[in-house]
Length: 374
Image (cartoon, rainbow, N blue to C red; front, side, top):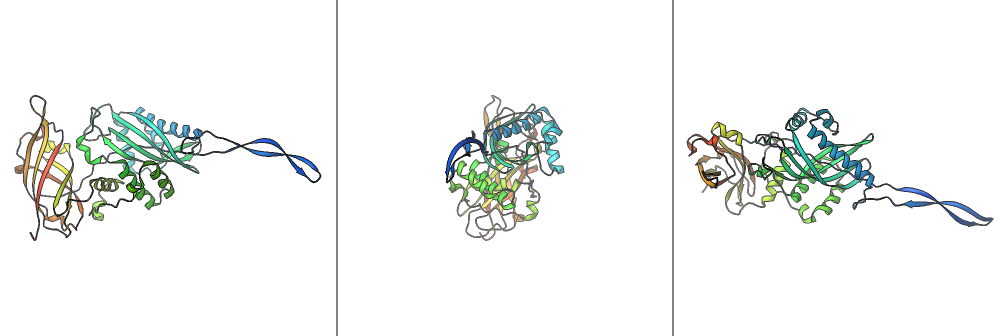
């Protein structure tokens, strides 16, 4: 059995903003001097209407317009117009992603836009996004509900995006229901904010105090102190991931908590529907070492069930494959560590015919492990 890492990127758009302005007016006042009374003009503080974060509502409206305009241009299929809303390096990967989104014929709605912070010519914004496509494409699924954040810069008289990212994500199917094939991409707001804060502050992309502000607003400080669950991954493997993907994988792993003590476990994540037509059931997973010592030379007995409708339309569990897998090419998994792997069933390990014709509505994996020294 061969081993390879794969990652399906799910693009998410986001936005942000803020501001605080002060105005002055005039008012006569009298000041006594030795030679008489002199009239002077004293400064009058004019209260500016602001949101609960102290951001001037004029700036709030400007940023709201920028966010809504971005998704309007996406829905209208205006490629050049959409590109003009971002102020980042537009490499081939980004341009290709935007082209795919434009061609997908999206229908979006944005709610609960909240300007969290304003600093000079930058703003931080969070909002809720629902994005659906006219025709559902399971191989390139842009459907999702997300709570997102963005950092915008003021450019000339407008606001443009420099960072946009989901901090809570549910990938949807063609009916607008959670797509179980992408459960591994769904993640919790607290964990995602925490992982993203570490990444951006570490890269020096935003001032750390912005995220301290957001952390106080969004969730208990305890979440920010959670340590990373050890993810054992080489630099070569990291290079195979899309930008930001390792941080998302780390957030998913953190959400699982520590591995089960004194055992090796497998946590199934997702499967790849596009491989069914090749007679292959391929799925991503974490393999986790809950022992207090390293393990190597792993062998696994794996069984896979899928849920699919029977003749009456009722979902039933079907055992589609099982077999013994030599996983020694993983090498040594250190104590408490997890590795990310893609495994697959094909050929003699499959117990069913017509895999490509199955309407799979989810899957479960059972695995029993052995290793050297047992």
